[in-house]
Length: 234
Image 1 (cartoon, rainbow, N blue to C red):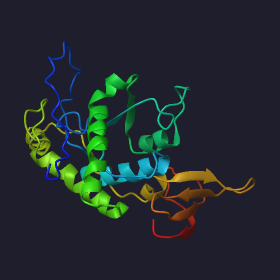
Image 2: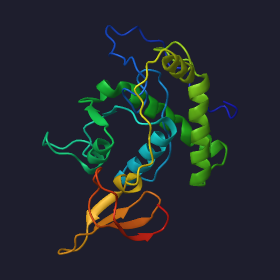
Image 3: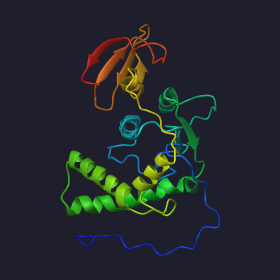
Image 4: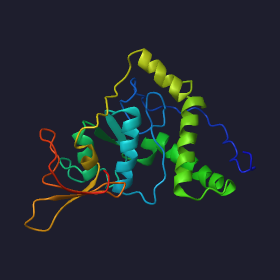
């Protein structure tokens, strides 16, 4: 707005004939908390890949705790044609008791798509106007904008700012979030895993920050991780 680059306000639309249901409890459905409209995370990555998702989700879980479900599309990162199979990201979510809920069409996930379009339309102009080029500076600004949005922007469904709606839900005992305990498996469940050479039983883990670990076996909740090699800080 200071650089006269603000997008024009959209034209008013008639109310929808039917609205999608809304969750009663905070943490019942993410990534935009469906009960309070809290934006649980926002960052910038070079590509939409598995490590980017692990980095994003790990930060969101650490800040807000663990939700019950994630509302996702049918991208191959989340969805396989076999209903009994899980992607590596799906298996990581399952490890911590988080279930995917699939939006079968883009309109079904309209809340998230509208938020994406808004950020993607405004951030490039803001970065250019403020001469923000280092990724670290861009990520820091996005975090500030997200927190400002959660604290101050009034949203239609809750009728108040997201942080206020979340606080009200907690006071009314309408919460489904669970502690994001830093269990020993946390750095390895949220990593890009692959088997080693044929004949070797080790598991190669590449973490979002570039650290590399070699485990003796795949993650199992009932047993501690057996770390064979560590390069970098997980």
